[in-house]
Length: 256
Image (tube, rainbow, N blue to C red; front, side, top):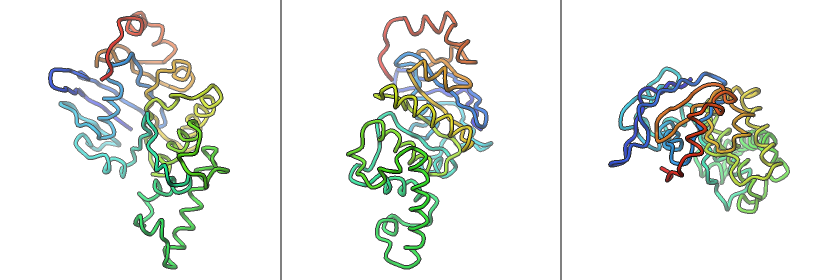
């Protein structure tokens, strides 16, 4: 599904990621873990196109996407949920999902929110049905018409996941999806992520500091430290490696 070859990113004199090689299989939940400043988010930014690498290549479904823009990658099936909620706060949960559906709806934004013509009304009903399916999946069916800004934090995170689903993605990039969640919200989000892989056949790349979540979710993990890959494999095995333990217990690093 995704092949990263010799990927590096330099910011001036700072080498954020160095010669990274990763292969991610279809329907895999793949973890990028490591201490603060290890280069995890920088790597995710290069996968979604927010940053272009200094060197190296990114192959998605056998196509070189290394220098394609984020909108192009979204159209090819890569969606991202950011660490901070990126929502249209003054729109309802339903409207937020319909914006995600816009990518494949053949409707303009004006037609989505002002469906005056008979054709637009028919298409809007179809979008509405699809939006409700997604909202029910992320357990927000009963809050479809609530403004996004009024939703609790856990619900806002779930809504962000729903918007990404609405794009029709094949690969989902999750940047610390459990940040700020309580225990119940964490368990629900982990269950949804697993279901996305098992029932929706999505490939998922996750950056997460919650080691319990990593152990419970991921099929494979790569550990980064100072931008370099120091370990890869089964999460239960990797977190017991002495060099991985040393990386986490060593001096605190500044985030990249």
